[in-house]
Length: 193
Image 1 (tube, rainbow, N blue to C red):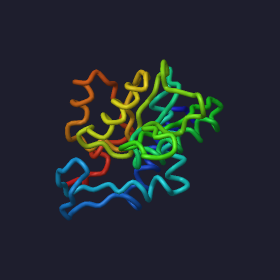
Image 2: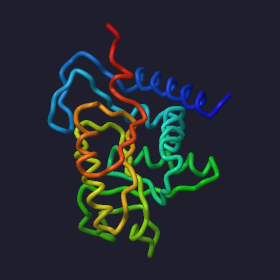
Image 3: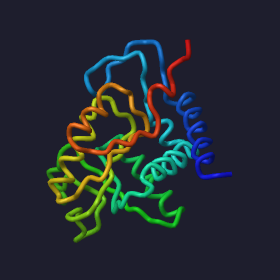
Image 4: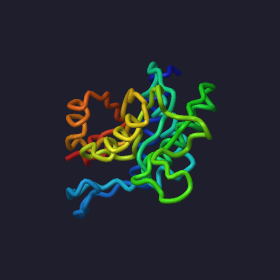
């Protein structure tokens, strides 16, 4: 079986898991972006499912193939399980890729860091990073992570999301000069009429 057919099979399996565990269609729900929608993705049940986490890690790594990336991470909370899945699967694949996450605001105790997960003395300065997230609507959450890692001296190579809701994120990232690589889109889940 070719790598392309493996990826297609993995995508189909992830779509099935998301449909069963994380996708709701019908009732009006308010999104993090402030918008309302009749399509809702609560990705936590999929990201915390063994097969779901493995497939997410594998498929995000496939989207990053060919890019020179030193770290992967994103904004808490949605990016934490994604980055964890990616870093675990990167080790399984034999090309370890460390992860980090960006706090929405720095703690007032401990290291008081906005970027977490780095070893003592380790920084993102001069590193090439990929920002990940679970669901992208307008791109606002990912841009917060982009701003924080750029302030830490990193170069953002790409933004990768599990599900792109097709509501403006691609345009937002294009305007910001960022490469956007969705694994899946809302179109993969809409009921065919």
